[in-house]
Image (cartoon, rainbow, N blue to C red):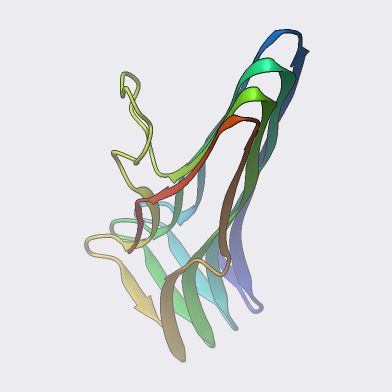
Length: 219
């Protein structure tokens, strides 16, 4: 490719998952349980192929951007002489975001050469358990993980493999220009798990648990 102007190779990927569940129960003995789970896996990549030639009079940009959004609300409520209420919310986000100049590629630019990624995460999930009675128990658990959780893990409390956000320059690649930048960044990393548990009565138990497990690599 030979042009007098800019050359842009762009990849833009987005995933979004929502899990909402509600459970209400009542009676002499009230038992309520709600479970919500969301899982996202994505690959976003921008690259110049191996052995390719790109000549630009101005700038050359190779950029991959990904956005991963999780939204969930799990509610369990009950009332009775005895109440046992449990709400569990689990969200897992895993991504591979790459910008590459592959082996043997040649880039010649009159201006700036930018090879970059931006992997963004926005997770806002909540669990709410309300158990009220003569003996009332409310148990709420919220877990958010970033990275790959392998199948067969008994408890997905941490990712086993990292989410990857990387810039790669291949063997024998040549890049010339007025300036050059290689950046792997995460401009947004918002992970907000909330757990609310209420137990009310002569004997009452309220137990709320939130966990963030992040395993990520910016290379």
